[in-house]
Every structure is written in C-alpha cells, then in structure tokens.
Amino acid sequence: MKPENQVAARPRLLNERNMHYCPGCSHGVVHRLVAEVIDEMGLADDTIGVAPVGCAVFAYNYIDVDWIEAAPGRAPAVATATKRLNPSRLVFTYQGDGDLSAIGTAETIHAANRGENITIIFINNGIYGMTGGQMAPTTLEGMKTSTTPYGRRPDLNGFPMKISNILAMLEGTCYVTRQAVHTPASVRKTKAAIRKAFENSMAGKGTSVVEVVSTCSSGWKMTPVAANKWMEENMIPYYPLGDLKNE
Amino acid sequence: MGKIHGAVEIDRERCKGCDLCVTACPTDVLALQKAEVNDRGYHYAYTANPEACIGCASCATVCPDACFKVWRWKD
Image (tube, rainbow over all chains, first blue to last red; front, side, top):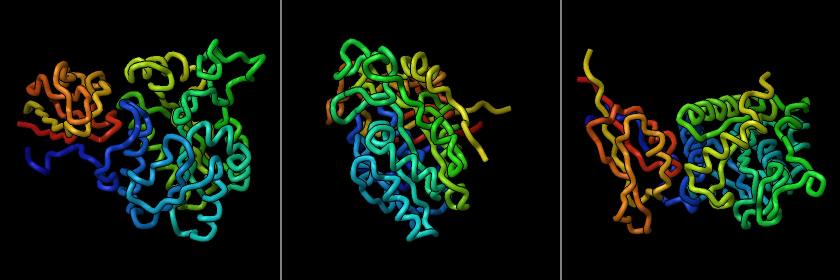
C-alpha cells in the first residue's frame, strides 16, 4: 500500500479526540466534510466557527479551527458580529433544528434577511437530540417523540416547519440548499454544497444555508441503518433534497 | 486493462459499530465483529473479505467517525 495510492484518510483538521456522538450520527459525517472543505480551501487559519447549543455544542473540540460558543439559538447573531469585525475570515455557524428553527428563529431569519456574509450549516433531524428526544418544530406529523408520545398532531402541535424554504424567500440569502448524508453519493453532494456556501461567504454574496436532513438514531429509537432507511422514506419526501435558491 | 485493487484500514478503537460502512460497501468486504468488542465496548467493523475490496472509499465516505484509510491501485 503505497502512500500515493491512498484515496481516503482522516482529515488533517479533525483532531484525534473520539467524538461523543452516538454510533451512526450524521453530525460526524458533516464535521468531517466541514474539516475537509476548510482544509481544501486553505482557510484553516482564517476560519471562525460558531458552535450551537445541542448535540453539536462540542464541535469546537473536534475541528481544529477557531470557534466561539453561542448561547442557545444565537449563533447567527454572534456570527454577524464576528464577520463584520473580521471581514476577511470565513465565518460559519453549525446548528441543529432545535437551535436554529425554534430557539433561534428570530436570529436566523434576521441574519439571513440582512444578508450577512456567513454560512449556516443546519442539521435537521426532526427532534431535540441532546435533551432527550423532545418534539422540535421540524418533527414530522405523526412522529413519536418524548413530548408527543402518540405522534405529533397538527391541530395541537402545529405543522412541521420548512425553515429553509422560508430563508430562501428572503432577499439576503444567495444560496439555500437541502442535502443529506445517508449514502456515499449524497455525502459527496453535501460536500460540494458546503464548498459552494463557503465560497459564497468569502465572495461576500450574502447568507448561504446548507440544510442537512439527518438521522438521530437514539432519539428515533432505531439502529443507524434503520434510521437512514426511515429518513429516506419519511423525512426526504417532506423535506425534498436539492437547491432551493442558487444565485 | 489492469484489475483494480483496494485496501482499507480501520481504526478499531475509534469505531462505534454503527454498521453504516457494512451497508455502504458494494462488494461486501466489511462486517461487524460478532463476539469481540473494542476497548469502548463496541462490536467494531473489520475486513471480513479483504480480497474483494475495490478501493471505492464508500466506507470512508459514510463513516461518521472517520475511522477509515483507503488505498486503490491497478496492476
């Protein structure tokens, strides 16, 4: 096995710590993609990430770039200040659906509406993973969670929120896309989307949003393989993959 | 045309036994250990059928914990 024949390895910017995520968690894949893209763009010393509150709260422990930890939901507001003060840096937030579409709805929508030159990476697994599998705004109709044990009822709990579609309608966003990381092909597409979003941020084109439809095998109480299958059959029909806006 | 060969190396202690690589592998190279576990108690993935590997790196692409090193070469 010659070194020149190597086609895959652990990215340089992903450090040696073992991630705390559950087996099969989509966060690990997206972390790796972020680390790979930053390194490929040569921005390892010029990137500031904003970590959310949620399972990805420890993102700063795993990817070796500069990080700021924001209060729940406030990552886009923190990223706004960071990018305005450091316009030459790549500034991105990494948020889950509880953080972005519930607690931080206002910050997210207004940062996108102002067209801040940041990238928002949005992990949508339809549940509050870290706190014990409660219903999130993105939870599907009929989906059982610890706070909707008989399934989500629209008359009682409202409808699942397609926040990326809302963000795509705003003038300030330049690129809004929805991807997934359940197959090798979808992982490659997500990587290309993250790259495009980061390039847009560096070119000052406005806010880029990369939604990644993800699994939460612990919260959904499934094996990782079954969770991927369930996601394909239930999540993706409601949250169809593809670019929502590309300007 | 030469035959394509591949090889994978798995970081056994980092593996959490999620089974995603086993499902993603198109040539059934990988399997999870049935009896043995690593230091953290997971049934880790191993190369049950290494000769079949074509070095497509699908396993490395879907692995959430970046456990894989993959090589590919032609005769």
